[in-house]
Structure formats: structure tokens, C-alpha cells
Amino acid sequence: MEYGFWLPIFGGWLRNVEDEQMPATFDYAKQVAQTAERIGFSTTLIAELNLNDIKGIKEPSLEAWTTAAAIAATTERLEIMTAVRPGFHNPATTAKMAANIDQLSGGRFTLNVVSAWWAEEAKQYNGIFTAHA
Image 1 (spheres, rainbow, N blue to C red):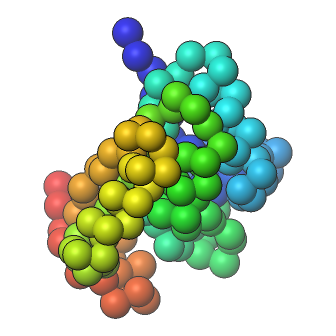
Image 2 (image 1 turned 120 degrees about the vertical axis):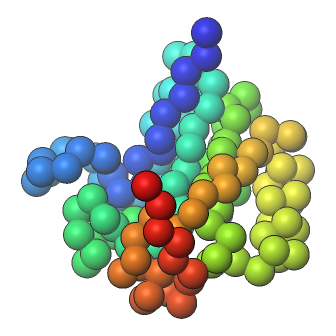
């Protein structure tokens, strides 16, 4: 059996908790990824969200693709799965970025292709919003 987790790009994923004691910093995300790898987790998913829908849009969040590249460089076995919303990206540039992170990670990079998540974010970032159930 294998286990995966969502990397805490907002510091943590809990809603309605004012301070989880999990900062939204790369140092914290790296610590979580390295600890998870050490204790046997196999995969981390890095959500692609430009706005923090957990803590509020004025709160920080890490950017998925640069975080994925940095996590790839600071781990050895952990599979890194990054969400991509096609309506926010140029396909050729996205393919090049994914191939580069895959090379950097030694073949540990995977994509999670998703529809848009949040209409307000799509509007603010000029992305395509696709409603879904």
C-alpha cells in the first residue's frame, strides 16, 4: 500500500482554524516533504492555486510549479504530482516545464490535470473557468 498527501502550500489545509502553527513558507513545505519521504509516504500533490481559498485571498500561498521544482531538488524518492489547469497555461510551455521538472527529479514528476477550481480566481488570473460537479 502507498500513501500520499497534499503539500501544505497554505501552511495547512484546515478550514476554520485560525492558526495551525504551519507557516505558508517553502522551508515548512520542504520540511514536511522530507519528513514524509523519510517515514514512507510515496507521493505529494501540489495544488495549483494562485489565491488562498483556505485562509483567505490576502493570505500567502506557494506557487505550485516553482515549489514542485524546489521539492524535486530537495527530495530523493518522493513522487511529485502537480496540478495543472489547462485553461491557465500555454500547452507547449507547460509541457516544457513538466519535462524539466521530471528531469530535475529523476523521473519522479507527474501531472494532475484538473478543471478550474474557483471562478473568482479564474477571473482575477485571466484563466478559463469550467464549472464542474
